[in-house]
Length: 312
Image (cartoon, rainbow, N blue to C red):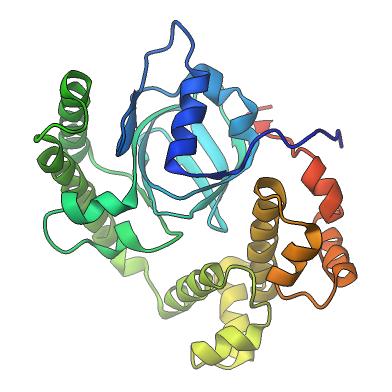
């Protein structure tokens, strides 16, 4: 594996995302809107898609709503293997972790990125859980009619912010309309899958959510079994049955993802990261990480993971 110096942070705040996009805009690119409270992109910037930024393990602190206009992307979102294709609408809540493995050369998408603190002022009514839960993803395949409304509202907002900026009095109502339309699409999508939801699947989803919320600090199955009022044996059996992956592997995946983020984006010493994740000593931490990844923490911190292309 080719080693290289750490070039940029992987923990991406809203302001940092705007900086990266601004640095990636080329003279011939259709410029996105990068405001004080939200950002909009109608087409992915070729220079951003092809840059090293797209090839990293990323964690975003903002709320993102995106639509895949063409192509496809494969990777992991919050531990879940995900395949995003043309026609997919996706909503990512704050602190979601994205690991892109493969993407097609023709991939293109549009979307909105906003500071989650704005939701209270922009969403009219109680904010739905799928917008405010931490580290959750909602992947939807809307019908053409619902998408037409979404596109119409998106384009109106695009025109308004380019004319007046995001201080315009029109923004709260337009943003509320977009968020309510996404909520409508989410409800429609969820209703279509109610009949597929089993008790085992519900247990699996609750387990994954708890693993995500533990942030890699709880690595024993009994911790989750006790909180879910289940026996370890039953929980382990259900997780394996639903996902074909053991519960221990899901826990290890979560832990490794968070360690990777810390190693790549922070300036903390390896010993500090080891302490933060509750390892008894640096040696145990290094052995655990190498057993999971094939690399020592130091090698990963200085290294670069490859990104394949669909069809390659």
